[in-house]
Image 1 (cartoon, rainbow, N blue to C red):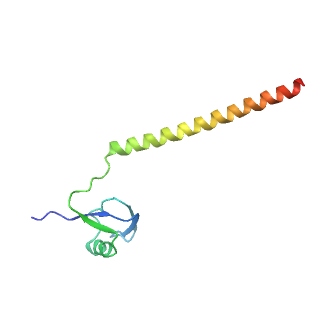
Image 2: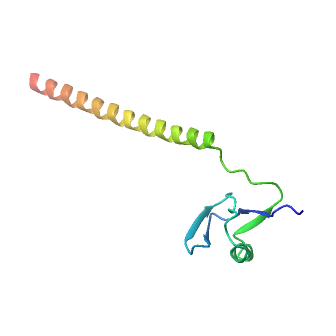
Image 3: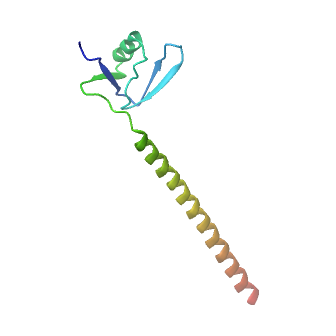
Length: 104
């Protein structure tokens, strides 16, 4: 029994039609899901949106996704903390300047 062919997106974005008639956005390096019909795969191949891969394309594990989500949340929290510190520093400098001006 021959192994099922696997495909990978080779452009920045490919839009595949699902059997239900919807659009499926596939980004560079993404595997083409099994549910896409043969005619649609042929169209994507002909348009050079996808290419056959010789080894299985690995989808990110849930651990990888969780780590990416945590990194994004950590980055957002760090940016918020930096913005708050900058605002607090500015408020302190403004107060010091106002106090100095009041003493003159």
